[in-house]
Length: 151
Image 1: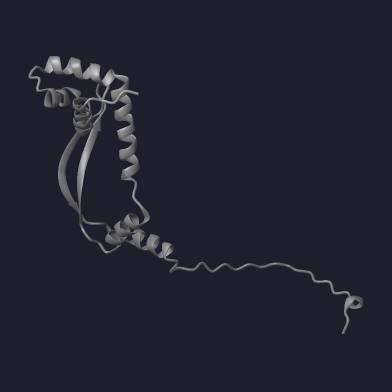
Image 2 (image 1 turned 45 degrees about the vertical axis):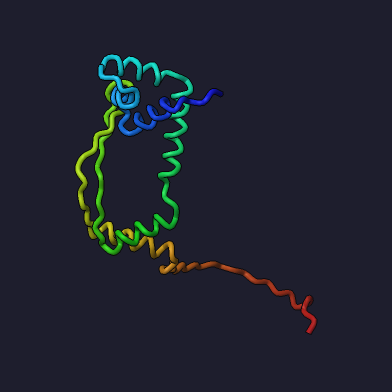
C-alpha cells in the first residue's frame, strides 16, 4: 500500500486534535478560505489511505491510554490518601459526520470520603490485607471395616 505524504500525515495529526477537518486543512495547506479547506478536507477524509491511517492511529491511542497495574495502584493510592488532582473536562459533540471535541476549564478535584473508602478497600483486596472467614458445615459419614485393619 502506498504511504501518506508528509502533508497528509500532518493533516491527520492536526485533525486528531479536535476532529475539525477545515481547521486541520487550513493549518497544513495554508489555505485561507473555509469553503475550499472544508471541501478539500472532506476529500482527504474520504481517501482510503487517510481514513485507514486515522483509524489505526486512533486505535493505537486507545491502546496507549489503557493504564497498567502500577498506574492503577498509584491512582488508587492518591485517591485513598485524599490527594487533590487536576481534571481537564472535555465534551464531544456529534453534529454532522465528525465528532467535535470541546475543552472546558481545568478543575482541581479532591476525592470524596466514599471514594477514599472505596480506594482503600480495593487496595486492601489487591494486597490481600483482608481475609474472608468462611464457615462451612458438612455431614460426613465414615465407614470403617475392622476386617481391613492390620494392626
